[in-house]
Image (cartoon, rainbow, N blue to C red; front, side, top):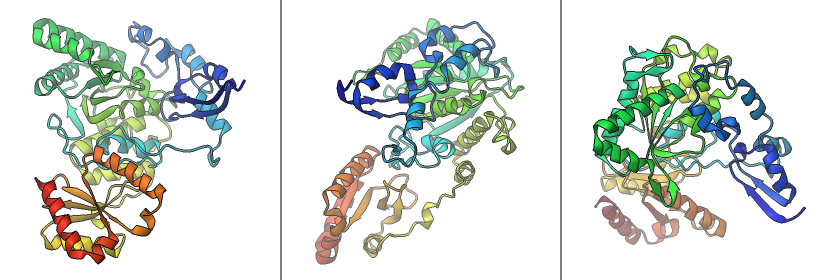
Length: 445
């Protein structure tokens, strides 16, 4: 006992309670971090290879046949995070939500899960980058023919995925790529087509091996093809999502399973850093409907596919409608944003006299930027963000530390931040305005 002053366990949702007990017993204090909306530990992870290569054709069905006993024994109350949440209730000062989301470059990649599973409480800094040229949108939906769909496999869809992989590798060598399928059969089919393509094309085969062994900063970021059961913890720049099923039964494998289905879906759709590319042969509107929200896990898959279609089509109105229906909240459009102070309005008015376009309050709470400045309203990205700082608030060390942290995150999202102090603006107006215009000119170059 008391061997360690502090024990930190990350990914506590992935640890069995029995595995945690020996080290918790020896800790004076423990810090446990995990996500209750992702999958608990199970034999799917302990023996992933066995299940990936299983010949059991029913392994992906709703009744869990073939793995039912193992799932019952592994899932549920044996998760360390569940025990921690039981011991430290919400409202306790030692119970906190880590609300800042870092992975996704574009908010579209996390917005669905945020509204569907996290009560809209996740905060993601808005990006000021253009979507990579190799994808049409942060979420790109491609509908293929379902004529070859049978029992969880769609040959046309699998071929389209392999062709897209080949195209992506020809167009760039920067982004890491992963493929997620809803079932093992489609995963195996894509693997088979990759091997066939490699046998016919030596250059493709060499690139396939190179990408599979890819690392970055000592971390594995290699190319993979995995079913939805086996991607917990993985993340790649681009994720290709293949949804193949026969389109007749409203069963979509692991994500249809009661209680755990939405967690598997949540994991699958949040693995991409830069872009999600979906290939589907499903009739999206047939998957589920609003009346099934409380009766079937397929409801969440239906809503995600509708959301993906709206984002891919750049239908902002439908995107907002779907997100609002998930969380019950109404988001405010950018055009309704107003300045927080006379100081902000005064700076914006000056910039508009210089023929700049200015928007107020860009982004979400915690990462809102006072002013976003463009040369033209239709420009895709902002020249910079302007923070209008008052002396009294920002004189404290905690506030300065928070500003440094916020600015580092915003800069990582492509923002250039310019700070203007209220004292400088009102006491040395001409000099401060001249400096601001000079900074904006640099941002334009």
